Amino acid sequence: MKDMSDEGMKFHCVLVSGGCGFIGSNFVRWVVEHQPDTRVVVLDALTYAGRLDNIRDVLGDRVSFVHGDIRDAELLDNVVPGCDAIVHFAAESHNDNSIADPGPFVSTNVTGTYRLLEAARKYDVRFHQISTDEVYGDLALDDPARFVEGRAYNPSSPYSSSKAAADLLVRAWHRTYGVRATISNCSNNYGPYQHVEKFIPRQVTNILMGVRPKLYGDGLNVRDWIHAQDHSSAVWAVLTRGRLGQTYLIGADGERDNLTVLRAILRVMGRPEDGFDWVRDRPGHDRRYAIDPSKLRTELGWAPVHTDFESGLKATVAWYESHRGWWMPVKAATEAKYKAQGQ
Ligand code: NAD
Ligand code: DAU
Image 1 (cartoon, protein in one colour):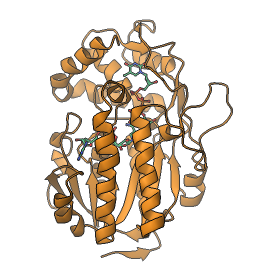
Image 2 (cartoon, rainbow, N blue to C red):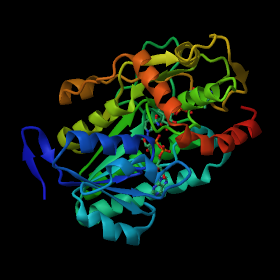
Image 3 (cartoon, rainbow, N blue to C red):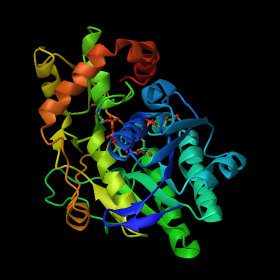
Image 4 (tube, rainbow, N blue to C red):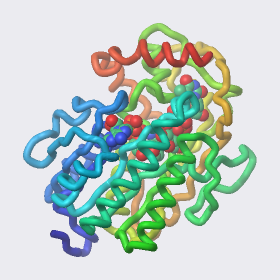
């Protein structure tokens, strides 16, 4: 099934949970393009955030799709033994949703990860957990520190605490049962196929619809941006060359405050830089995330390709401009939800 080469472990079939979502679908496309010897089985429940259209162009001999839920142990018994690795993206992923209704986050992110880990244990399948930098909580704006792998978990929101809980399950299943597992915690992703509920696509699609963008609080919260394709290459590096039981932080030195990002979007789209509205802040809003990616860079030799944020942003804006049929059908419902929250 699997063997070792100079490039690291080879996997003939990778099960990608959540492969119809934003980052999962970018990862599937990245594997198809860069790893010709690997097949992909996508397992996705197609929640409001997942769409088969996101991977339709690559479905075929090398990519197959199973419609199902990661919490369904019987289904996992049918799907998991056919693969030699699981890359686990499936999650409820949006902080604002977790504040409005935390239940699905505990269920999918915690129980769902537990079920997948049990399947990985039963069938001795390599497991990689996709996690977030938010498990570490936040940093002050004037703190010179960045997140490093050994930092204590201190999550703030129902979303990030459910991801932290899942990560701890992964660590326990590795230590107690010997599941061959790794974890990566990544910063904020941007790129094509991101749901319009998230910051960058929400503002871009607002502008395309003639609606003013919405900025939370004082706009000075800092996020550390990375392109979804760079996240994908980093995940592959950890999956194939990472040390079992280890955590790797993924980031591309992309710290920017929200006001700066919004002004860049307005500039790229030819609008005045003050053409937006201030809205109610997110409860418990994390101030700053910042990743120190030294371990990933030095140990695994990974480096990002999309190092120019402005040009990545331009390409992302162009993608939303040319994919109105992709986002238009879900835009009104997303904005109605925000309006009810005063955002
Ligand atoms: P997303 O919301 O766009 O996609 C989630 C996918 O998971 C969807 O396709 C959805 O249908 C599927 N899914 C949800 N519940 C499921 C279930 N019970 N069973 C099977 N499939 C289910 O999310 P995303 O932004 O692409 O994030 C993917 C992963 O990356 C998540 O684990 C998230 O925590 C992590 N992450 C995201 C970011 C980011 O910036 N978006 C950064 C770091 C880590
Ligand atoms: O850090 C990694 C995390 O990044 C991932 O784990 C999450 O899945 C992903 O959603 C993202 O979380 P954030 O909460 O940082 O992303 P979001 O796009 O929701 O918001 C980014 C910042 O922009 C945040 O400070 C809130 C702010 N914001 C967001 C929206 C939707 C606004 O100011 N206005 C908005 O309309």
